[in-house]
Image (cartoon, rainbow, N blue to C red; front, top):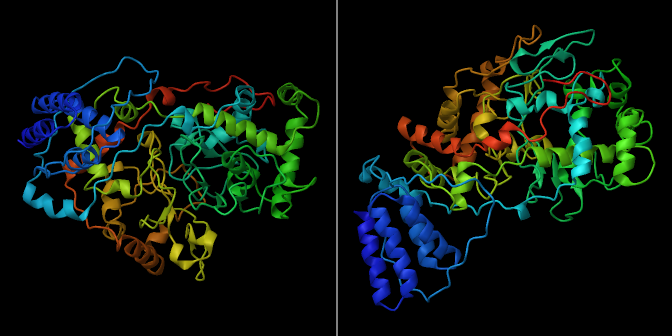
Length: 543
């Protein structure tokens, strides 16, 4: 048995002069592993790794992250190091399930060549309070109301919550939603009124989880809003530098843009003053779209009084204050770091054998962590993964069809065409459909596609979840455009060229899904402030 071999090697370390207390602890850990107690062994080795022992890091990678059955090379003795005391973290009583390392799920001979091709990656450190911006609670309370208030849409019929509703996992539950000119939530939303929606929002509404994390430097599927790496105090945006505003974070800057999007919140020319300003490219200044929206909020006594109390002086409400308030609410309401995986990283609880095996695939042979890395499980980078072109797209091609080239539309570099930002994964199982256009409603199909995007694109079966819209007869029309599909496929092939070739069986895909389920923060999904009964504008609140 592999654990027995390691156990013997660790006993030799004690004889060779290794710290006896540490050796005793490790011996107990691996004795527990022989009994099938994966968690006890992992905890002992992880503590030693955190103390700086390079042997522990290697054994962690080989035993706990890399699938297979061969024993690792016996570790070389290292100088004694103190065992740190884990930082306390408030949590419910740990639910400890002792999973066995289910390492016999595939023949070793078939796995071994692939193990060498994919470097197992270490688990990320657990998220802590230091990883998130501090919350201004009074400001977040104002943002709570503004988030659900349709006052910020041109036609006063759509709020932030329309596409990012707590009941729908902070997304909208559909592949491509309907913004202004519609009523209802999710797939029940329908065009209504004199300004009824005639086109879908061209991209999937992402979840809002952990957008208050300090390490976030890029937002939107195409990264069109980002912190300038050369000037960390500067935010690059579609509207140029925003240095004249007092924005608290990149998330606050992001809040400013959905209100300008025609199909999302502003509406079409002739429908309202905000839409007219957007059409005429009047965004900044006293007569710009942002100023018009700020004046609306300022004209509501309850909002003006709330901002006056918050800032401690009487003055008109400004758009950057509105953005900061909504961002503060999002940061407070949609923080997710109490999942089973988070408890595992903090050594408060173990995972089931199936979830543990899925984790090993995720960080090992599945190569998921090559992009879904770090504490937030995202490298915040852009990758062309051959996502099927569904819906209206963002731009028109030379032959008249619509398409979405993702990052390439921002950098204007063809190398970046069809590349999209790596999403973070907390609560990922609650935020489907998946993909920048929500092309996949089946997470297993999405994972199979990700393993081989070129083959996946060719075999894609339409499965988007779309609200009824009479005008949208061509939701899948782009799939029949040979030139476009060839471009998407070629971009995916280039992206995958430098990656190891991976093959996963259906039961291994199921294990990955089981691991993804451990990323669910059920308390966060249940909500904190929840949906307000009313908002100061008196407009209808989306429920």
